[in-house]
Length: 114
Length: 115
Image (cartoon, rainbow over all chains, first blue to last red; front, side, top):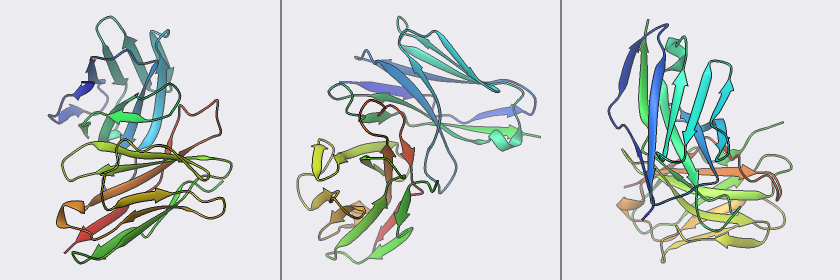
């Protein structure tokens, strides 16, 4: 069955460093992949979408890569700040095409220390 | 432009009661999705609706759960005869009309507690 895996262990880094989060998937060939941010007690917030024909996408301090051969996406936050501390979720579309149904990974919690 | 609205934000019910969760999508959005997040678990898809139509309900439990998105008014997720295992955060998301359903915008969620 389709499966998404994110590192369940929290990632602790120092302010100013680059945070790298990993999303791996199996039994699946998604047309695109998304990353969301979720703060405690709040709903997920969309960050970036990368399509299967794109290798890399950037938005301000964020960078996402998508390797369809490895079935992996990497999410980077450069020059990290304490305000970047949150849980980051990887999501993939599933079901029939364009239904919008998403499956989410468990999320990786990032803690940026000042 | 107001975001996705959900109410109530917190709902407490006793076992056997009914829970009604409401979701108003973003202005101009005609697609609504409901997800459930159990404690210490990830978001799980429940149902996808368009106005007056259920498109995909593959994630909905077979019994006690129902959803609707009427022509007028908010989308409703209804849970009948709640049990303790229904305690979770329920999130609604919306997306624009067909052709751009890739990005979903989430509401703040309703936290249901069943006593």
